[in-house]
Image (cartoon, rainbow, N blue to C red):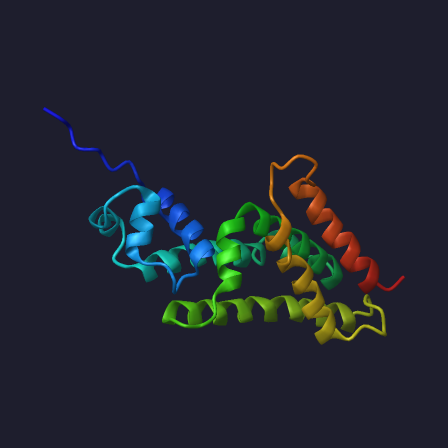
Length: 196
């Protein structure tokens, strides 16, 4: 008697495979058939874990957003001068991005084509506003250079951090470590922002 292949996928391992496929093919270009082939399980096995492809997308994006919003609740983000909190948040956001690389990559690539994507974009804007408020407070405290445009500085700061998803590949020979990248982001950004 032959035993049927047992579904060894957990919701987390299925989610990891789905995120890889979404990044490779794009969410709109991914079907449940693509997901089942990538996971090596039947479509019915996938439906045992989730109701839909969009549920997988929401879970993946939630993981990224939970990590980012969690930074804003950490003591280092809540205590001290605004410039110190901003440096802390910048470092931690870079770390979360690298720790949750595929999930944040997917978050940064959503375009608003589904309810979940529109929800994700709204949450990203909310997060960005929180960080922009820290920049504004640091400027009001007199800790930023007078010639820094806050709106432009906010965009450049996010641009630098978010670009990490395009080139950071942990474990490659000669690649900078997570801590080295986070420290370089903070040093580079705040050398240009802080009043000397």
